[in-house]
Length: 387
Image 1 (cartoon, rainbow, N blue to C red):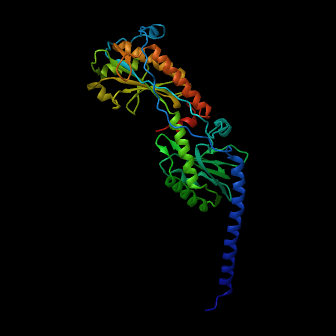
Image 2: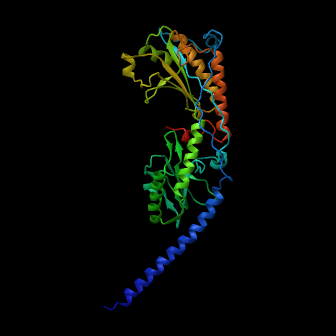
Image 3: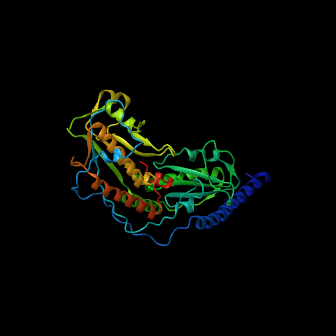
């Protein structure tokens, strides 16, 4: 069967189009590789990662200072008007060892500038170069994709413009896009399968724009995620101060709620009391049941607890040493009001000398985080140390 001139013309045009797309993508790939190398260049060589050291504090047999001393020295504090009794205070006892070597991370400020941006030290970043500017809606499938690790998409209008975090309702068009998958958090490192799923979604979106892109090797990124996860495990620290009644009796929920609210705590939906810094809205420390059971308005009316723990999440708090000082004072207030005391894991009274040593460990942990360019309480820290 003979083909018409129209059919021949269409076949030739199709071949030329395919060849043109291949050549265009090859040119774009070389261009993007150069841009990625310039934008996200990493350090020379790898750091030796230390093994994890669990926090421990050697036993202390301190003198017996009056736990009410610190409370009395604060003229702004007054005990709650309602009668609330019960509850000694217990505390965890950590010792922090600084990592032996720094990881290949840079100052977050040098990456993030004045606003949210891709963070290639803790995220797998895939750059896309659309053939023409596109809106955020063009990558809607990527914005809503789930991989078991947080994903962020950014866009910018040109190489000189700042990055902008993309959402479904983001306005404007962007000539560059960046898809970012978090490499590690408290749930562990991103695995090869998660990374490959992430790359597959990007690869499915790119032709619809159309856009050239380059993905890194999944195995290399998974190894980088494992290294980051080990580092964060080494630097992670949470400090607890336990409160129990001196006579071993249970703490009534109604009394606990009254004391907690009088001390500035508010019950959060997660089932724990939170102390929130008014100026920033950040949670500095929390108060929860010794057993980990969540509190609720209803349960506090009818139930009691054997003790409570004030908890400081060191990496997630700006100025952890100051936050520890505030938490210690709050614990003493609560213990004094309830007729309890601060105790260690063996239910022995924990005195000021031991608390001072724990504070030193908190300060050392904060310094170790800063040494590897993870500022406590910063956006980078909040991402890495999220559950």
